[in-house]
Image 1 (cartoon, rainbow, N blue to C red):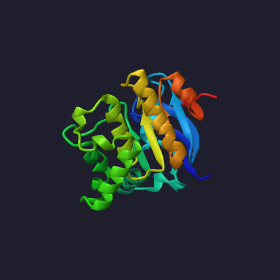
Image 2: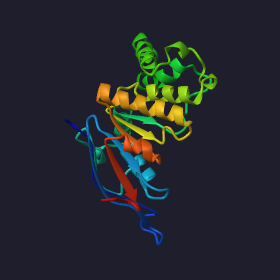
Image 3: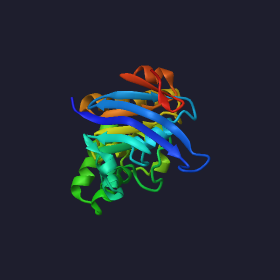
Length: 226
């Protein structure tokens, strides 16, 4: 299996060179293979949000190496990082961040529109396929504001898959949902992981969901617990 993500001694400090310089990540080593489904857990203030931002190429580490599909991201400029993020990483957040006045279909098309600059028939077809996969074909023309929380989060999952990413980062994706909807959303991600081999990194405080992942990684005080 191919290695999708590799972190080598990742450190992150803030206020560099000042009297209040603070190191929040202390040499993180982590590897994920294609098809992994990993739970990332840790209390508030443990550094997991900082770590997730670095993995998602939204922030750079102070030191260490981050490789995505064997590509050393530390050697890339901002434009190349943005392109790599758009092509290889999908994001699902606790809040769905859909455009409320857009339809489900239009929201799923958005990453492809950003990438290509104009709509085409291929994009529309892919959005339809993804909405069918998440069970929302009947609601393709519904505005996001007129959908339930569980439906909105399923649209967000379809949107995260629009660019066929190798890695999906799911940050508390069930945190705003009732138990039934949370289980349905989790099972949907699990099915996609198994069917497509998409690698998932799930940040969660839910012990029950974490136990249903392949592996659990704990972040404690800026380090991975052993």
